[in-house]
Amino acid sequence: MKLKKIPYDLTVCKLPESASIDLSKDFYFIGKTDEELSLVCKTEDTPACTLERDDGWKGFRIQGVLDFSLIGILSKLSGILAENKIGIFAVSTFNTDYILVKSQNFEKALQVLQKAGYEIE
Image 1: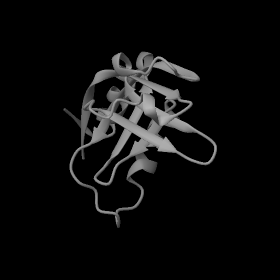
Image 2: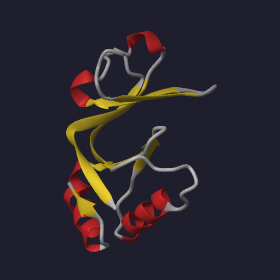
Image 3: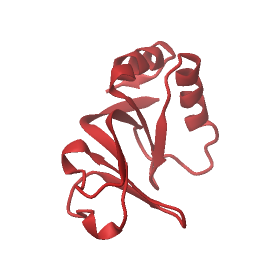
Image 4: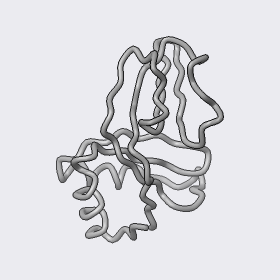
């Protein structure tokens, strides 16, 4: 399985409302529930009005389109990283999964995944 590095520094933040999100940007994830509005975006695109923010994330995605019938892909990746004491923040799209790790753990994460047989692009 191939993993592709995301070339941006990322931020995870909580916002008071959605109007401050610039939907014209090319990379972001929005999560809204009855309790919160969260945004993952390029650090340089983080809105000024965040309630809370956590900078210093890097990420990679599973290459290709994952069929919904596939089981355990994210679990296997997160298990390998957990065994190596690397925490994750995972987000998913219709096509695939993205895994974010803190910047200081990014190279180690890629190394342990490569050692486990994943191809890194």
